[in-house]
Length: 416
Image 1: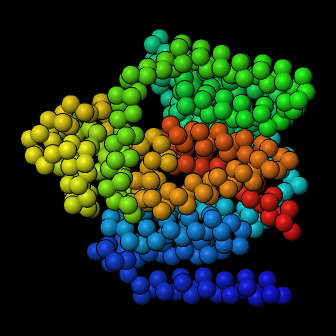
Image 2 (image 1 turned 60 degrees about the vertical axis):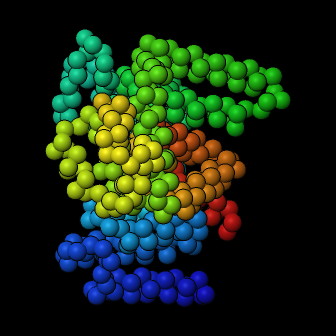
Image 3 (image 1 turned 90 degrees about the vertical axis):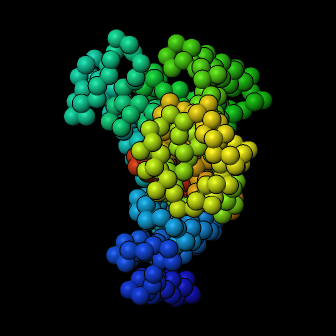
């Protein structure tokens, strides 16, 4: 009875918050229509955050902080992140509320995830043989430079997706499918997914096999050595790992992102990375009109000046330009290619702490459950996020939310 009353109060509160959207304003958005459009999305996020408290307090705090950052945003380029985060958080909420009804049918979901992976590999094979299908993806196979993207947008995306799906093939009836997924990873020619899938596999052997059993110990050694061997072949022959080149470009972007993020402890806000960071990492190669475009969309010029001083160590405009001319990437990084760093840039220290605590809490719960498959898939997602942005790509973001739902939902059922 008390629980029902509480739920009713929460629901009434959510309706009241949404009704307030008819008279509230965002503090920094000038256009009245854009203001209200963005505000309704932010208020919806606030409602979902409150409803999540019952299932995951850390998740509710994280989403609540993100909502606050959106409310105090200084740019109207926040529509897409609001929409994406709202959809994913709503899926999380619905999944958690309905989990007791479908938890006994998880095998069907696992099988569906396997079929998604296999279908992508089928299209990769077709693309490899010149049959491009509805996506009409084109690449020069004579150079074998770009990989096949399957049903995803590019090879990196399909590589991450296959890595997340890989643990579902560890079940006895699906183990032969591992070979097909590995073929797909090779066809993608993206080291990101191979590293993520390899990490999930290594965690699997340490979580599932008994170290005190001789047979299990041999299996551990064989599987780990096989992963290392395949990873070595992949890094040397398929997607060649050029460490100096990676340090020069992506490494510079990572280091610069971290330094610029520290300029504002509260974060730069969502929708700013794609304008702020290319000024620090690409302005030396960019044409003047592009630099002007970026500058026109930066909402905190004082913060930008502090960032330039922190990176270049000088206030002299000429010397700063000389620095950026020497330290530049061949293309602009609109995303950090590291979800943790980009989230740190957007939400600052507090947001990053909430995010890391939430991920750690979910993974720890997943490790404690008898069914380890969701946490293994989440590990693959987390590793992918260190080198790419899978949580901004809808299919891989949905998979990540599904794994979180299964882990938190199982914990809630155990408590009950």
